[in-house]
Length: 333
Ligand code: ATP
Ligand code: FE
Image 1: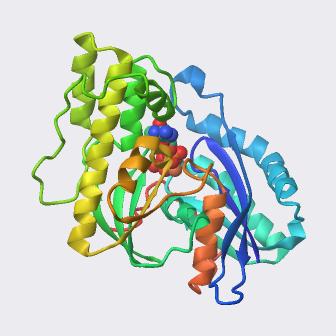
Image 2 (image 1 turned 135 degrees about the vertical axis):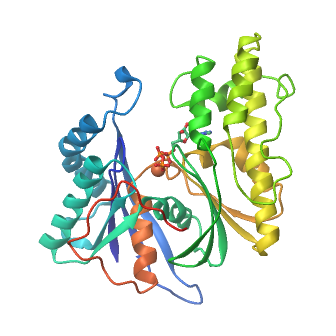
């Protein structure tokens, strides 16, 4: 009934616990997040980017205590756990290996099944914290490394509908924030600055305008931001204008895809899904839009536990303990 989830795919050590709530009195049962603890590594700041070897070492040093914190938060004991899930990819191989090996070892020691989870499946199922997801639905994953639109035909059957041709959405937020001197991570910094800026101040052209496909591109917005910055645009105005352009483009493309495929429900997840303007814009579309709960947008362990819960619900077999870490692992072609 209690599932542990571990994510060490990049520079966050995440451990979460979810509870499968059994069906009762006409309700189909759901999943409840019982704990979600994340240690965001700080050693990388001095290098201006994630140092893979340092990330692995930090995971090794922290994972025990983060697990302890998660157990304390849930009020549970190790022996209460009925299954363990851990991210096997994609991500930094050395970093992934720490959580993957830890999860396998724990599952074996406890004598419970182990599930290897795909990091993007974790991001998608993070939204299951809010309501039970009923396939088919569209899933827009917008994070630091991905901008992917999937058609989830059923649990485990993902079709790629569109993807970024260059930068990921979160990466673009981070780069524009750096350009404006707003710090890292850029997403929250841009949002905050945008509240004090004029979204009409800097004109941005819609990327890939007129495309028949459902792809994304952020390099044009990034270049336009750079040019506006050089021309003396105020950081707040640039932030507000960029945010509106990026959000508008993400929403428009997703709505077009939903209409094309006849989908009524859209899951929007990944770090950028924390963005207020994006949430507000999706709320205006008339689609049924599901976002992850608080603290579940950026990398965390609970979302991996939720992916494990979905796998169990769908009757998937546990993963063999021989499963390895994969740096590159597309969820769908
Ligand atoms: P991936 O999952 O693709 O491997 P990641 O795990 O690094 O990438 P996440 O932790 O899911 O990415 O998300 C981090 C990204 O989300 C960063 O680029 C950050 O700027 C962005 N982000 C976080 N909060 C916001 C926000 N409020 N608005 C916009 N972007 C945001
Ligand atoms: Fe992520």
